[in-house]
Amino acid sequence: MLHHGAAWLLLLLSLFQIVLCAEDYYKVLHPHHRPSYMALVDPNANVSLKVLGLKKDATDKQLKSAYRQLSKKFHPDKNPNDETAQAKFVEVSEAYEALSDPESRSIYDKYGHDGLKQRRQGGGGHHDPFDLFSRFFGGGGHYQRGQPRGHNVEVKVGISLRDFYNGRETEFQWDKQHICEECGGSGSADGVVDTCGHCGGHGIRIVKHQLAPGMFQQVQTQCDACGGRGKTIKHKCPACGGARVVRKPTTVSLKVDRGAARDSRVVYENEADASPDYVAGDLVVTLAEKEPELEADNPDHVDGTFFRRKGNDLFWREILSLREAWMGDWSRNLTHLDGHVVRLGRERGQVLQPGHVDTIANEGMPIWHEDGDSVYHTTEFGKLFVEYVVVLPDQLESGMEKDFWALWQKWRGKVGVDLHKDSGRPDLPIPDSAEGKKDEL
Image (cartoon, rainbow, N blue to C red; front, side):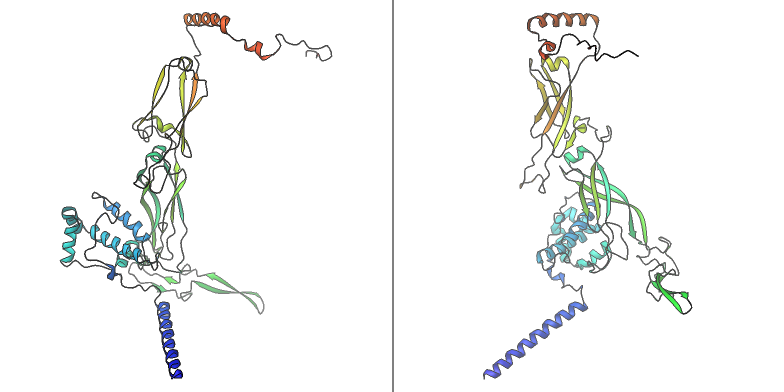
């Protein structure tokens, strides 16, 4: 009996191991197989702009931008074994597919989510989210493992200090390489691509060179007939000339977070130059602070446009007259980068020395935080440093000069201080000694 039980146990273990091996073998043969994500689709799912993080007046461009970011973020290939991310990927795909269709968008604008829900229950089918991903980005809907990756592209965009302070959504253009839409990246006008007859599709050729009688050298070179691609095209695509790619100006939406650091970077994953031969690298955008332009960057004529920034602090130089610095009784309204007013001033009798610096708390740059202004975080600010520069008059009317001179002389005799006397310096020049005296030339 004991032997029979052990035999059954061994048989069950063997069968279990065979099942595991078969599963691994299937994964090798089908590396990009995914379970049916249609099981995750809820016919009553909340297909709305809120799923994409957009408002009701969102444009088509904002809709595409939101799908581009969220579909990559929650793609199952990037989140293996994460059912929450997989469900979110399907939800984002469903929302974009419904709202990018003009008829569905019209129903949503009029009747909201309930209108779309009734339309889908009335026969509107669900499509594979990977098909949508493939149509949007090109390729097979999955991130191909082992496929070469293209180089990252770095772009520098000039941002004004005002936009760093307030935050802004803007756009910029750059010359991007795209897969030719006319031929789908084949380079052929009729879709026919032949194997190169010179290299047999390998893209390389072996060339023999005779060095001496009976002595040869083999050199591997790129096939000059196909350019190393292993394919030839008889009828080249008129749009790309057989190159399979075209370069054209491309507009990119850019969001500058409030308080973003100077020279901070925004990374657009897989948005660099595209090619059929590799996965696109990243587009890396550096936010550089540009010199202020009076008309373009300062439509409201605020003083803050000309602030200087260092980290989270701002710096300003305020000009004072002799009377203001010496007698006080003055005020200034300094307009900040968002238009609010910072009050500067002194009471009568308060003296300001040239070069004096006031430190004003919470009037510097917003300190960047990933949560921004939200219920989870209250924005904090750096400091504003105000340096005072005193400008002395270089010309005086004769009557004014006499009045001031009489005033100085009057009070100088009463309470004045002789700075030369207090310095301890000699009253007269020290005569040269005979020994050290030099003849004049």
